[in-house]
Length: 124
Image 1 (cartoon, rainbow, N blue to C red):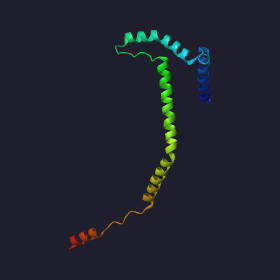
Image 2: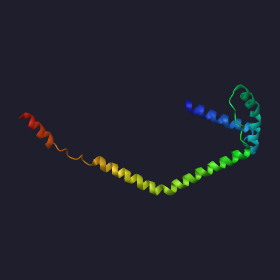
Image 3: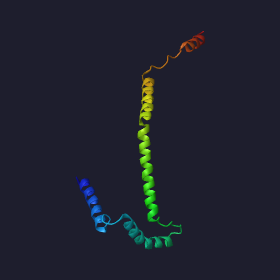
Image 4: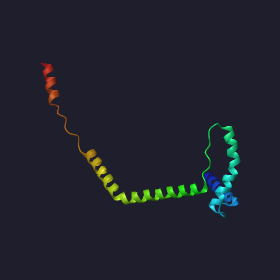
């Protein structure tokens, strides 16, 4: 019960904070620009402290393009998988039946005649 209360409190506070910040009321581009401008001074101080080159934040247009591109790639991949699902099911069924047949078949008999002949030869 305590876990549920903690999770509910965290989710509720996240929604409350995002609503107070105006994320739900503004255009997404405006929110991104506002946070990008707010982070620039912090990035400058981090650049001074760390000798590694920190790349610039991507522009709003780049972020929108990449988001759309990867979303579309995910949709294409999902549709391709659904399109190929009958073939996949056929392959998986064949593999499963082959495995079951292999597991249920008795092992081939072992020819024990050479072993018996060798043991008879050593007794003489």
